[in-house]
Length: 87
Figure 1 (cartoon, rainbow, N blue to C red):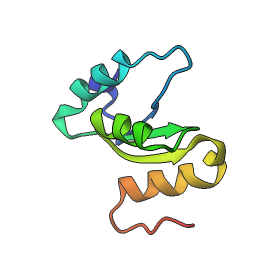
Figure 2 (cartoon, rainbow, N blue to C red):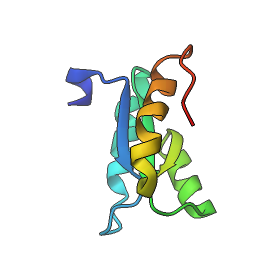
Figure 3 (cartoon, one colour):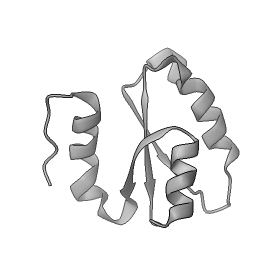
Figure 4 (cartoon, rainbow, N blue to C red):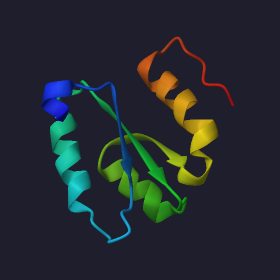
């Protein structure tokens, strides 16, 4: 779907409950064209999670428990360099 839809932002949970990480590698390989930016979400904010998000190409990592406040401003910031994200 990424190749067909060409979204500006792809949102992905950085750690699936079953421990699946192969999806992240697959997504990174699909994002190599530079048309989409990867936004990771997670309930964990430790160094391992940050490194995992970076390893699959995430440009930002936001707190899953605070999505209602962070998601739309972060997407706006990632899709428009002139948009200032509301805190």
